[in-house]
Length: 338
Image (tube, rainbow, N blue to C red; front, side):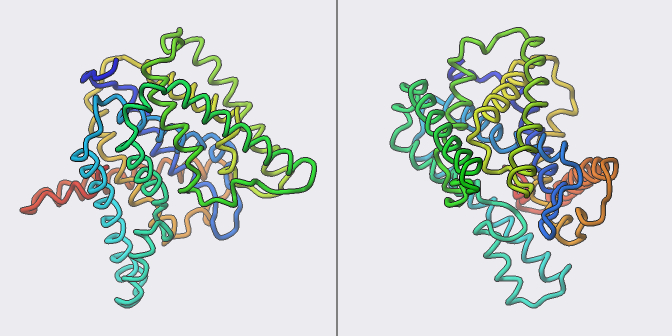
């Protein structure tokens, strides 16, 4: 499979689902109150970042080489994403919040650093990973199984220590001591896992019915575990520190493998749908922040309407903005791509 040019439609679909899940994470939990409107939607959206890193790991490590030129291209691409976000934050502060230039510049810089509206922490994580690949690309590919096993072992140890502290000493997740962008043991594990599963795993071609059945059972378990640990034991709803948990890892693997094997005919709408999904990521937080949407909904039905409505409003807006920007001399519509 290595070096193949054939497009995996399941990977495209998984990228789109990751963006929908990101909207689910952000729209279901109020940052102001910490309350969650729909716990099931919130917890079932937790696969977003693990699968996002797995998809990127598969796509990057499947390349034959990781040259300096390609490294520069990826870094410039991420810089473009950050500057686009900063520009949106500048316009949002100046036009919609009605604040001055100084505040708009300040918020734009905060956004670029990943601390205002758009959660850009993952851009910096990828920058670190790509820098590692620049020097160790061939070594990582040659020893991918050992690296994945070692990183999974580290994640399980970190998770065990955290849960042991919480259950026996009324402690806390030790992951909280490290900023999310620097939890490289977690994100590099998922990154490498995507390549390993897509190219090396012997169960990659198991029957879909088996994978779907396992996925449903594990998904139910994932919700129960997150509710138990975060709500019943810690008394607060935030499961971002459970990415190292063995059950979350298995769940993310099953989601990746289920969609990776999807080889149906590609609907005409899929490419357009996927192409606009990153724009949804860039825009949706401004609606949530500016209109305080999570605080305005009540109940599971309204929460579902918020998730789907917000996604499609941002998707349509992205599509319209791209068409408008494409009319300009320079194709700046790519500012809404990744």
